[in-house]
Length: 302
Ligand code: NAP
Image 1 (tube, protein in one colour):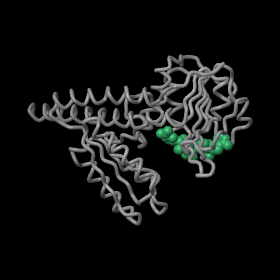
Image 2: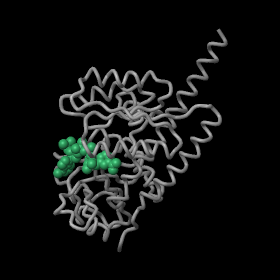
Image 3: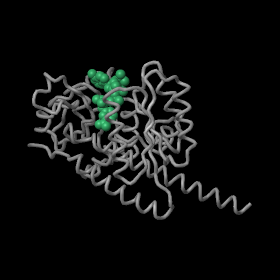
Image 4: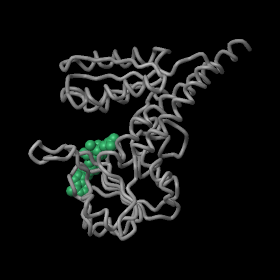
């Protein structure tokens, strides 16, 4: 058997086209333009590439990008002041602090300063809490993207055994919550899990977000399972040889023979992250527009 290869680029393109259409309607109806602000501290080349991609995607979707950059030695107070300014700016619907920040800064504390209604990464305590309570809020982009991939592939979640490898706040924990909300039976694994292979082999849906090249081998995967590879590991130029230089957490060449569907790296989960950042920015803009209308009505009334 050879698995269906889930085409993340095509699915992300559909999501982005849908968002762009909805942005046009939103602008016509409200006279407002959704705006996404990215804040980059320092000159990490990979982070600069990610921020550039987000800025371009924002323009392509008809939104306004705000590109804020601070020096690598910026103080906590300087970054905090930047975030507070963006929180207060009505032209900005969403605010994203590019992680990781330089070591002398507390990334968690800074992320928590983003206003909850502009937290398009879904990482503030308010949005994490809303997700865990099953209430509406802004959800982290990558697990939202995985839910879209699963839906597009027609995977039935109700009652399915789902195993998530990785328990980060950015991905593993919100992923588990989203699967649970759809009534999957969820197990979360991490570096202290006993017999990872055995736990993974139970999964109907196996999701790996570890950051260890090809950790998930063929014998970790039940025949017919759906395998989602979130890992993005950069190879050295010698290791990369003729490949893209990116490799996932799953041994793709071996697992493709046993799974029923699998995401490649690159071209699987990655493209969905930006697509859902755009969707979140539109959601934030809608929320702020509704709030403004409601407040204006209250003002007229009294
Ligand atoms: P992270 O914060 O470093 O978390 C890694 C998780 O993997 C931790 O929970 C860790 O366990 C667990 N782990 C480490 N070694 C393990 C092992 N040998 N067996 C089982 N579990 C192990 O990473 P992250 O931010 O979640 O990202 C994970 C990967 O996904 C990275 O490659 C990252 O680049 C990629 N990623 C991709 C996207 C995208 O857009 N495609 C977005 C986010 C992340 P402990 O908690 O016990 O330490």
